Length: 195
Image 1 (cartoon, helix red, strand yellow):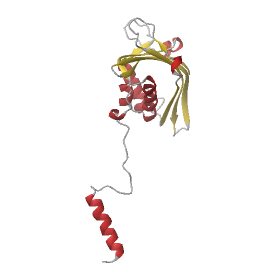
Image 2: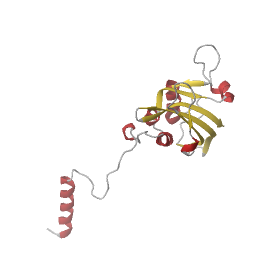
Image 3: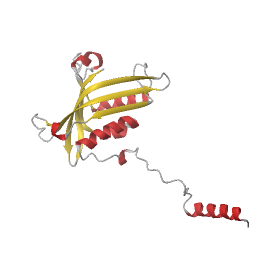
Image 4: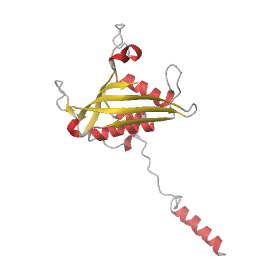
């Protein structure tokens, strides 16, 4: 048997006995699943995972960051435009809860706008400027003694390749973070953006 044929036979034998793995390609780690997110054992890790959920457009990661009693609170100028009548009194409310947040974020990540004007973005970048810990606040509300409020400046960019365009929102957001066991969750996201 000639040397090149022997080398090919040895390489094929090696691949067969090593479980058909390619020895020249290292194993890739899949970090996209909800079971592989960083443990939200600090408020900063929680907010970094928020950025990651948007970047990956991963609704499972996103929802794992929200407390079941989550509320998204709008600034007053947005209530008439995007507020929702939650209690049936024909007045738009300045917040919505977990279920609508799941619907809206899923739509943004995968379906596009409900009016059909915008397809789902090709890329989403959420950048938070997290202040140092000495700037974090304790929530003064009764029953929230262990909650922390972190007010971040943010920039959110939705990019569309086909039209070479983007939508941007920036401003400030106050995150009311609630510990449960050894994990932190977003209980309230108060929007203070400039669209």
